[in-house]
Length: 523
Image (cartoon, rainbow, N blue to C red; front, side, top):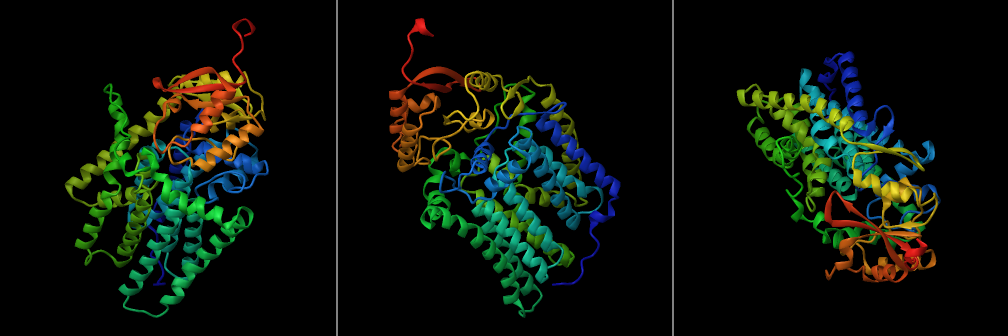
C-alpha cells in the first residue's frame, strides 16, 4: 500500500503548457467576475449571506450566539479572515471566486494526471470551468467542501501511507467545517476505500492503525473548533443549528427538497437561448449517472486495468457518490454543480477510450468547451452594465432592475445605518442588521422563535428601511410563521417604493420606511 507512485502523467506535460493553461484560466475567471479594467460585478446568490455574516464577525459578533447559521463555521471564518486582512471591499468577493476556481482547477488537473495521459489531462479542468463553475459562481460552503474533499482524494492517490492518511483525515475535517454532510460522507467514503484497499491486498495487518490515522485528526479538529463555539453559544444551540434544524426544516421549502430536481432549466425563447442549456444538460447528464456507467466499466475491465489506476478510480467513484448523496435531498442545479468535479473527471476518463463513439464525444466536448471559453467572457463584458460608487467600492451591475434598487437606496442611506431583510443591500451599502437573522422567510425555514427574536430586535432598534417581498403579504401557508413580523412592519412602517425583480411583476421587492406615511404636500 505504500509502494512508490509511478511518475504522474501531469509531469509529462511541459511546465510552459501548464503555466499557459493556468494563465488562461485566470484570464477567463477575471473576465467573468470583473468589468474591464478593474470593476467587480455585484455578487448574487447565497454567497451574500456568508459575506454578510463575515462582516458581523469582523465587527465583534460571535457566530451561533449572536446570529443564526445552519452550517459549520468554515465559510464565515474564512471570509471574516480575508476581510480582516484585506478590508471589506467589493473587489475582495470576486477575487475570492477567482482564487477558488483556480484552486479547484489545479486539484482537478492533479487528479487528472493520475488517470489520464497527454493533453487530455487539461480537459477536465476546462470542462469544469466553462460548464460547471462558471454556471454556478456562487461562493457558498459547498464549493469549499468539494475542494477539501478533492484535495483528500489527491493526497491518497499519492499512496496510502500513515502521513497521507493523516492529511486526508485533516482535509475531511476541513470539508466538514464547511458543510457537515459533504465532509462526513467524504470521510465515510475514504474509510470504505481504505478498507477495500487493505482487503484487496489480502492483508489485515495494521488496519486499526490506518483507521486511527484517519479518525484522530478528523475528530481532533472538529472537536476543537465546534467545542469553542459550544462554549460560546452553548451545546444545545450548536446541536439545534447544525443537526436538528437541517434535518427537520431545511427541506420545508421547494428549493431544498427533491422536488427541485430538473426545475432550473433556463427558458428557451430564441435560438441563442439554446446555448444556455448546454451547461445544464451537461451537469444533469453526468451527475450522478456517470458513476453507474463508470462502475460498470470498472467491473468489466477489472482484470486488465493497472492496479494503481483501478485504485484511483475506485477512490474517485466513492468520493463522487458521497458528495452527490450530500446534496441528494435538494438536487437543484447549483448543488449538483458544486459536487460535479469527480463526475467530470470520470466522464473524461470514460471518453478517453479509443472507440469511435468515445472519440466523437470527446471531440464534441472539446469544441464546445473551446467555444464557451471565448463566448462567456465576451458576453459578460459586452452585455448591458452600469456602475455605482458604493460604500465598499465601485461595483458593476448587469441587471438594470437590481441597479435601480441599489441606486435608490444608496441615495437614501448612509453607512452603519440600520437596515433589515436584504443581505446584499446590507453588505454593499455598509448597513447594519440589528437582528439575529439575515432574513425572514415564509416557510418552516424561519421558526416562530426566530420571528419573535427578529420582532423584538426591531422594536429595540427600528431600522429606517425594511425590505419585504410583495408575496409575503398574501401568504397563507400553514408553515408560514412570519405573520407577527409582517404585522409589525405594517403597523410601524409605510410602503415607500416597489422594485420588480427580473421583470416578473408577481415578484416585487417592497421597501418600507419607518413611521407613518407623510402627507403629499410634505413629500
